[in-house]
Length: 245
Image 1 (tube, rainbow, N blue to C red):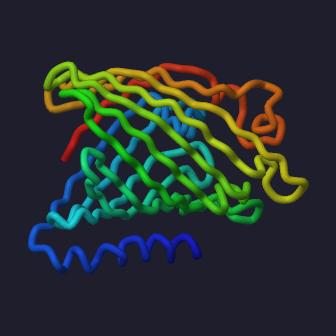
Image 2: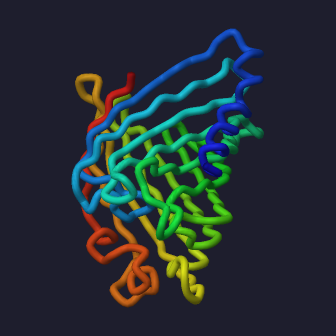
Image 3: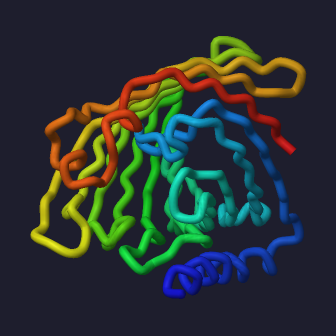
């Protein structure tokens, strides 16, 4: 209930912007992927995922809101994300500040609360034509499964080789205060995650092939305390195809 209220507040926070602007732009997307990796860890036990969402931007105000969903292999088999924020520019740097709520509608909360939210700030700039560099910071006061405060930091980059072909990659670090979760003594851990790949647009579809991995090893607390497993955190290739609506 707490997270549903937060999700409602995200939408309500951008409502004044919507009413103040004549133009509200709605966009959507749908995708198929061989796996759904979140910060390097498979959310579908390395099985295929069907994903999609909608976004609303409110004129030139910079405010936006949206929702996105995917099948997962836990928590009632569905992840539904609701988010809202504000985009602006500061000199050559584009800024994006917002909040995202991760909801698992079909999950039982008898053991641990899977729903959680994060605040984020992202920045990017273009040092040369077609080349973009960026960074992001996410913070949750109570991460999924009641694992305490968590921070995720990332640097990323992309290069548009042509109008239809681009390459991109990212490197991040996830820190979690208590990978043991309730109940028991707190056990903190962190790991790095990385991905590199290429996207090609053909027939109105974006085809993306990406190598994804983490630094997680067998004996790490994040494994031995049951937060994830070795298979789901292994390096692998992920192929996806996306259609913008």
